[in-house]
Amino acid sequence: RTCGRFLLLSIMPTVSVKRDLLFQALGRSYTDEEFDELCFEFGLELDEITSEKEIISKEQGDGKAEGVSEIVLYKIDVPANRYDLLCLEGLVRGLQVFKERIRAPRYKRITPPASELQRLSIMDETAQVRPYAVAAVLRNITLTKDRYDSFIDLQEKLHQNICRKRSLVAIGTHDLDTVSGPFMYTAKPPSEIKFKPLNQDKEYTASEIMDLYRTDSHLRHYLHIIENEPLYPVIYDSNGVVLSMPPIINGDHTKINLNTRNVLIECTATDLTKAKIVLDILVTMFSEYCQKPFTVEATEVTYPNGKSYIFPELAYRREKIKPDILNKKIGISETPASLAKLLTRMCLKSHVIGNGNNIEVEIPPTRSDIIHACDIMEDAAIAYGYNNIQMTIPKTYTIANQFPLNKLTELLRQDLAAAGFTEALTFALCSQEDIANKMGISISATKAVHIANPKTAEFQVARTTLLPGLLKTIAANRKMPLPLKLFEISDTVVKDSTKDVGARNHRHLCAVYHNKNPGFEVIHGLLDRVMQLLDVPPSKENGYYIKATEDSAFFPGRCAEIFAKGHSIGNLGVLHPDVITKFELTMPCSALEITIEPFL
Image (cartoon, rainbow, N blue to C red; front, side):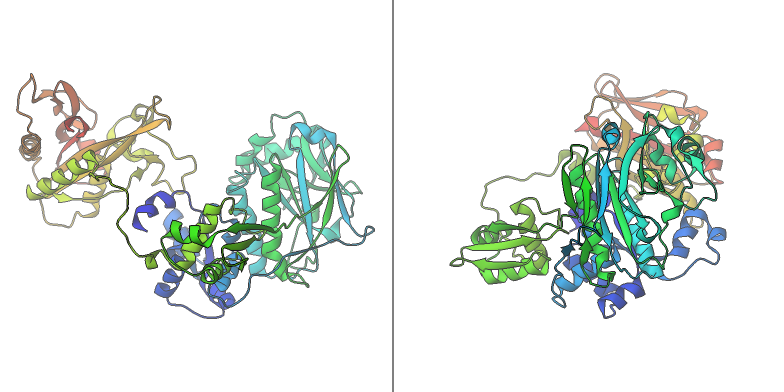
């Protein structure tokens, strides 16, 4: 669990659900520890227990958080390909089936009589912009404030995830009773499209809409998708009312509210497969609130070539898997019936067929993540419980060795601690100000890797040096008795165009001495001790030496560059008063930072 966590956290979507609403839907209450354990059993992780007030206070300050809800929120990390768990409805359904409190529902598409069937026609003009569209109707749905919020939130989660920020798929939801079909999906010059966008009070042309949202914190990120196209996609009803201009904004005319009874869902796309998945997820999650639960009204979509298709597909498919292979791959020895039961608990309805040498697995439309037999095996392993799988010695003969760089790091950590320094572990992400402005250099000179959409100003870039993190640690511990002697051995990240990912890691050693006097001799002594441990003698030929240099982070005339084996490996010296002041410190500091990779 621990090894995978750091890898997964960066890519797993986080779903925020109200704790009381979740427990109400589950039909029982849990302690935080019990629910954390339940999530782990199901292959999820309870990442954080917080509230809206706490989130806003952390991101924008206490002043902005006044009067905000203090309702407890659970933030749950969900695997990136489990689109069916991105909302409260899917999460509850999955957990209830997993605990065998309910059976997985059967989703059904209902095709109304031809005279009542909603139709969407796609025109030739869309081919160059967004050529595909799918649609469906949720009939006689009952919405409450919480259900409505969940519906909107799921759309946003899908937009950020499988829809790739609306570039592949854009979702539009409309009050069907405010428009009349058949509907037309076409593309027109921006000057010819005019309507009142969602939550606006007057009509704008498409060009004006683009200008209007250029400064919008949310919608401005999607403008680039179509703004340079000669034609913009648009959906009209039979009376010329604009439903939406995908992927930017819906029309205000078809806005959904809590009194809406019939919802038209349309997805325009550049990827038809993704559009089908998105539509299936939306209708399966929220059809439980329809008068006939888990039923969806079909819509006919006609493409420019004249071919018509009925959506949503809501396709169930069957796969066969051998129990022996399942047991062998997971490392267990369960009966075929027991394995079928495990899979059924994961919403994969299964039963043993033949003479027990096959299990037939039914994959529902909610599980687009099941692509291969290995996906079925993974679900069986989750249901069995990874912690319940007995550890065995691998049958393959290999000799394991510690990664040399990590071995060197561990050895140095022990000896630096023995030298009287305390180890700190700081964040790998930091603000631009920390590594640039506060250190007296421009951000462009740092070769820093920038985060595309940082959530807070504290985590804008990957650190290029360990020094700011240690100085911030000292600032947070100013009340501790002096001297403060800290060190850290961790990775820094810099851009590198020669690497396939455009960046590379460097393992750095950094130490800081903070006291009433600078203590340059202490840091210099530490450098000598490190070199002694590395068996590098003080010599210009094949050892190490220091040479006076200038660096904006250090006091003029109190900085030296360190050379070892003919290469520059870092700096040491007394920090510049400006740097000390910017990190809110009042005492002088000496610092040392070197890369340890040349000593492998």
